[in-house]
Image (cartoon, rainbow, N blue to C red):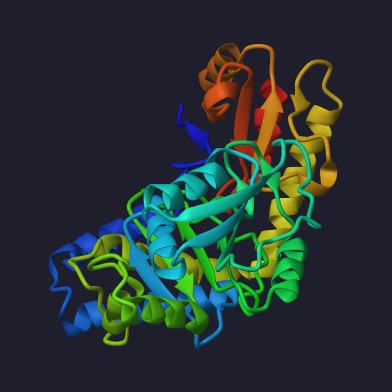
Length: 353
């Protein structure tokens, strides 16, 4: 029996990843120089496919880093001199807030319970330089509507806005004209092995990094925005990168682009509706997020009597789901809903439950 991973990351590999890895090995992709023309071609192709798939503007920059966690630190170093403001409703939005603290800056926050909507009328301090959202909170399955994020940006045009789209991309419909930094990793919605993070940064974010550098302030070392930009303009990276992952991302982004982002979003919503409708009617297992307007379409969190028993039962039938996160570990399961997850497999999983 072959397992199907509905875990929220790492998750099920996209179906063509194995053939792309085989191609990479046959073409010696893992041995080429990261300063040579072959890698430059891979770099350019991946950036182009990613921008086309996600609707990233031509004048925005795509940077390759090691992980989404690293992306948090790089954004904090390059976009904040002293003050940031954070919308915190779970462990990953909290992690970004704490990363800013660890860098000895002065973040402030508004908090909401994981199952509640934020108060978007909250006063954001005038001195805040960066506003941070976790658009899809992987730990709880709560989502922030992009319209809300865009409205905050419109009300604070002089401030930078950064969003975590780690578990919602490529589904998330991001208006990159109103977002200055976005970041994600590849082991969730792109169905790839872990080991690559992506930062999308616009010119305002780059200008902020330069301004901090001009003040002789720390913006990081080899992966600061200026270094990343200088290298990317040559279709390179500052360090020896994960060439295989960059190659794979280009291939998967191209395939998803051929499928069409609207088709991906439609399928994602169809599967999410099937899962939520099932559990809304279940006698004992219920969705953690009651408010339908903030329910994630890509990470669906369910309250259960005993997560170990539920996970064991599903695994016996070849379905691997995630446990709840931290304090919710023993009483929740998390079901991922990414492009590689098929509706027929979702229905079979629900039949087991």
